[in-house]
Image 1 (spheres, rainbow over the protein chains, first blue to last red):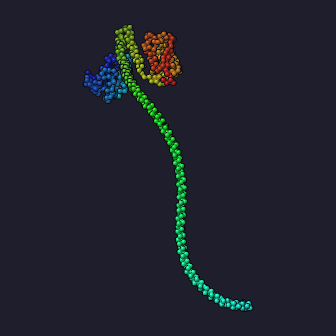
Image 2 (image 1 turned 45 degrees about the vertical axis):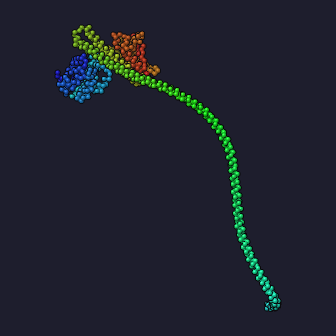
Image 3 (image 1 turned 180 degrees about the horizontal axis):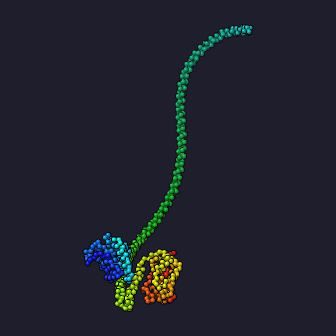
Length: 146
Length: 418
């Protein structure tokens, strides 16, 4: 597989959430090149060009990362911490996605440098509108800063 | 003159002639006298020689006398000296005698004193003996008391040992209690953590499948609408609405469970400002009654502003919701002071409820109206009650079916400072 010019890295362990989100994004005319990975470990493999991504070019940064918080193995917070502490990736906007506004996660994410935080509501309508708006916002901002 | 002189000369010559005759008479007498004289002279010479001897004798006697006189003077001086000595000695003797007399008196006085002192000594000895006797008795008493004390001390030692043991037991019990408290606290903490993670899981994991149901159903409605008839679409809409409702239920339930754990931080709340702000936050859809707010003088109170805000939102939105079938919506808000509390009132002129079911009013998931009539999760008033109770306040209501409901809640007034 070729992973060139990926603009959005979408990290989501729930296949349903991923399918619905991707469909909603495409349906909303969100045509930017998006790559979906199923967990945090794969997200880091992608970023650091390891494992199946060994042939990817390290300098080929995504413009935006949509990162689910609660994932098995490497959690969204761990991925966020790793990326934001690495000067190579710290400037890439990260939008956190979560099913819940419970727990101390929100503060922690912002403290670690997350750019936005979206709580996925049960009613997908609102969620897709929000993710589109926020995603576009950070995408545009990221491109402008290049 | 010459006559006078010649007369005198004749007289003088006669005189002279007499005197011459006298002289011759006298010369004869003188020769006799001389012869007498010579005799006398030799007599005198004898006598002189005798006188010389006598003088010599006298001289000797005189010198003897002088010698004797000198000796006498010395003897007299000696006598005088001896007399003086005698007198001095006599004076000294007088003094010595006086001294002796004085000393004798002293001795007598001392003797008298000694007698008194002796008497005193005798008395003191008697006293001492009496004291000694008393001391012996006292010593016996002391010895007895010492024995008693020893006995007591032994008893005290035993009692102390008992006390010490009791203390140790208490300490041990305290330690055990403390340990138990620590254990219970840590158990509680872990239960709380469990609850928190349970809430998180519920919120996270329960919502995910519902979100999928909701999302996929929307896809069917959006992409496959042509494959369904009207009632089919209606069913799909029902699935969407129900999943949405389930999400709301989960959110409310979580909010309610969080209330029990949330720290209540009290501060002075300007209630009038808060209620006006809440009123202005309400958004109304087209065709909905815009409520008429009658807001009285709202006294300030002590409370956790974010929680009290939730109380107002729930009560006011309740009033609006239950007035939706009325021609107009009136929400009357007022307050009055009762003792250390301020009582707030939210009154609507909506559907009201039957006071027979009052005890179900504040129960979780308890509803007095059907879902078709008035939508809701049945948790709003439970939240209100829990918040007010956590402020040491109370909440109650009065209602008349079809005429409206008044909700009251009390909060500590500023002067109460709970």
